[in-house]
Length: 298
Ligand SMILES: Nc1ncnc2c1ncn2[C@@H]1O[C@H](COP(=O)(O)OP(=O)(O)OP(=O)(O)O)[C@@H](O)[C@H]1O
Image 1 (cartoon, rainbow, N blue to C red):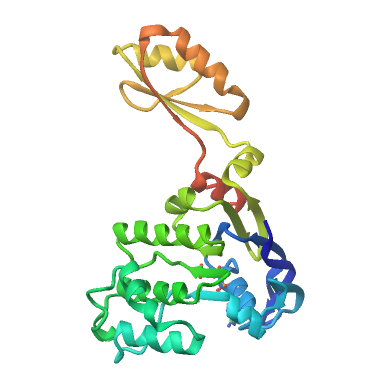
Image 2 (cartoon, protein in one colour):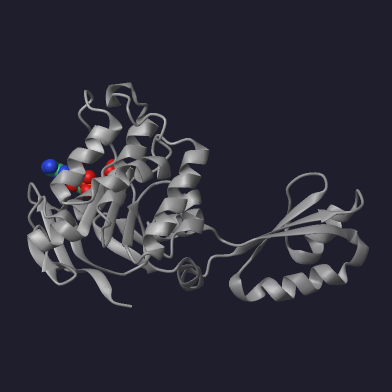
């Protein structure tokens, strides 16, 4: 699959302080990459560099072979900022018509786009009357209007209710299925876990992880947790003694299994027969991985 974005050895200082150091990241067409990092880790700076809004100190950025900020790159990239700002006196429809004109896109698709982002009924209301979530949806319609090859989405779900978040990810999936490379900077770990193909983690300006969730899980060697429910009142102590687990309440035991020990533990539990009434196996999630790679072991 061909690469849409290639960032190579990026360095950026602000007030002589390095905010990005030796960052290399490549995104192929159709990939959805989550960009994670604590506040101040450098996510927005990376997005601004890719957009050509702030100059690089060293390194190179290529968007389909074009330099960041060039006409060709601008045409290929769409950006959804965290706080979308529109002219409040215009309606949603007028705003999209204006952007379609600027981008040379067919204005006949506007009705469909407004419908796609759930703004059909509000299309002819002034944006000053929109909620934050509605402005975010209009921003997304603006991204879709451009039919970008690379979409940079900064905290796209902030301000959205759970149903709207679900809809937004469905739209992101459609974009990616059409070949758009998508970079999503976000702190919403739980929802990203299921909706992205790759995880990139910035920590203090360095890219400390960049792979699929399962590959990162494997590399990190994080334990799997098993929650075992005992059938009788004495069962929990017995299960805890047999497996080295810890009782977490009257009837349950939590076992922390290193990666190689999972099957042996399951065999031990199976040998306990009717003493065990239920088992939940909880593999390490994105939150555990994020803590591991960003060096936050608290
Ligand atoms: N215009 C600026 N002038 C000086 N320093 C800046 C500027 N913009 C960002 N920084 C600094 O660069 C570092 C990275 O900031 P950046 O906004 O890229 O982080 P972020 O990962 O997007 O954070 P957040 O999750 O809080 O949005 C921070 O230390 C920040 O203070």
